Length: 159
Image 1 (cartoon, rainbow, N blue to C red):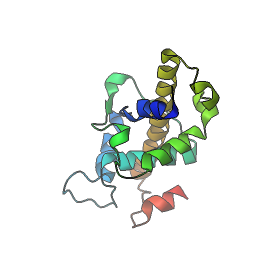
Image 2 (cartoon, rainbow, N blue to C red):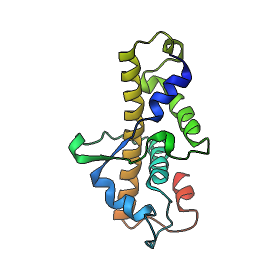
Image 3 (spheres, rainbow, N blue to C red):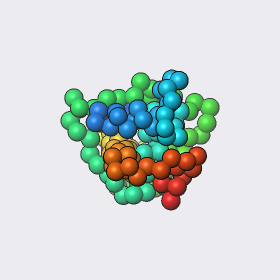
Image 4 (tube, one colour):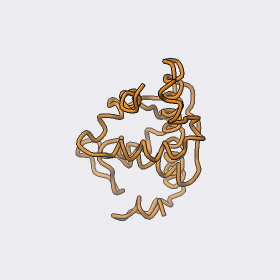
């Protein structure tokens, strides 16, 4: 398998998020014309990406609950920002953690279909768990009244 074919296998996936995170997603993601007291991300996937990066930065890898307590995105990863290199940037970040996901580029060419499927699953799981940890962090701040609203709220939190 080539690296482009491998990337394509990742980009068709729809990561999941815990249903218990929906309230924080609805507060911080702009869904239509609803106003919010907090600075907002556009689509939910933008918040999800930020939560993933925040979870990674804070070292908060949190497994998702059972499948029946989760939801998936309506969009595949490859459709999150079609005309940008955002997904390439995310994949670069993910592949810097190759030991954590159990992936070695040198083995890609010789992997069989089962190994490819398992590796892609581990990568998606990696994204989901760090995003879940980031969403939990945001939820905790919101619950404690420590989410300070400003135009740079998310940048300040990432610091």
